[in-house]
Amino acid sequence: MKGSYSHARTDNTGNGLNADFDAFAAGWVARPNARTRITARGLIYEVKADDAYVDLLPYRDGRAGGDQDFDWTRISSANREVLQADLDVRYKLAKATNLGLSWRHKTVDRPAMNQTQTSYDNVDGVAVLDPSEAIAQKTTTDRLRLTLDKRYGRQGNARLTYTYTQVDLPFMNVYGICEEGLNGDDPRLPSNGFVYYFQRDRVGNATSLPNASHNVALRGSWRFSPRVSMTGYLNFADEKNDELNSYEFARTMVSPGANLWIAPNDKLMLTMGYSFSSIESNAKICPPLFGG
Amino acid sequence: MSEYTTETDVLFFTASLNPSEKFSFYLDGSWTHSEAAFDSWGVLEAEEQVVNQDLDYTLTNTYSDLDFTLLELTYGMSFLVDRNTKVYGAVTYMDLTDDQPYVYGDQDGDVTVYSAGMSVGF
Image (cartoon, rainbow over the protein chains, first blue to last red):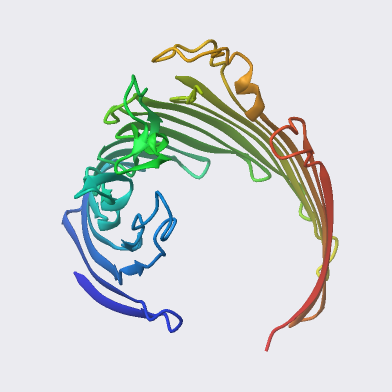
């Protein structure tokens, strides 16, 4: 068993903003019998950076349609509390054949996600910035991985890995895409008819990160002779995100490849290879149309 | 909704030759071809009618097509002066071909990099 603690502090002498980093880590290994090895690891760390107050002059200061207050407090996107726990079990099925099972649980809490999107509200006759709800502030990931690997004497080896990952609220652009039609509503900013504000009234959440994914990886190598060997691999991934409010994201990836190594004599070595990658994904397209 | 497809092919080879204990030569080469494109968005449906609206986006997707081919070749050698001293040099040639120059302009170009050095162990 082992453990560690580390602390780091960064001072920005230019603007006086500071950041602290604290991390705890611990690990434990056990061999309950000759065929089994269990490994457990834990990691907790926190990044806490100072908030920065952004002081701006009022919009159209002293002129008609102005005086909106654009001051705001910037919460650093570096801020986060992270917890990661790993549990690995490796079991020897037979001679040169191993089965591995691993589970990872990870949470990432980002206070800055509280401010990913803002809108203007009419408060006492004045338009003020209103941060969106923190609907994607905390991301929780659970990853389950099954591995089977086998050696074929001194000539070859093969490994098959299957990974299932489930993510609750992956990082996303909250209310980042697609305006709704006005349908007769007044497009002007509350309390200020000089500003047409409806372009930022977006309603769709968007991301290219999945909330559920299946990955299969197959890899093998074979030595035909002491001077010729070959390695091949195939990776496949099927991913989706059905937590978005405006569309279901989907992505499929296929990536095969092969390498050949030849040593015609003791002084010359040749390596050659080919790989291919295909990624198919989707996106929601919302062209805004303006009349007038 | 639109589908987006990215495809990449990579071919590479490496040859290294050690004719003596002091001399070493190598030749690296790779060819990478990448394409990315949206499917056609077709004719969209509007949430509300706008005067003189044109909802035909049949060809709009082609504006963001990407198609690059990159060729990289490196030839290098090293010479062992004595047990702790080695001098080495290499020349690298890279050629990029942009076959969909609409987005950022035509980015065709090539680069040749010459490098040389010496390492001393003590």
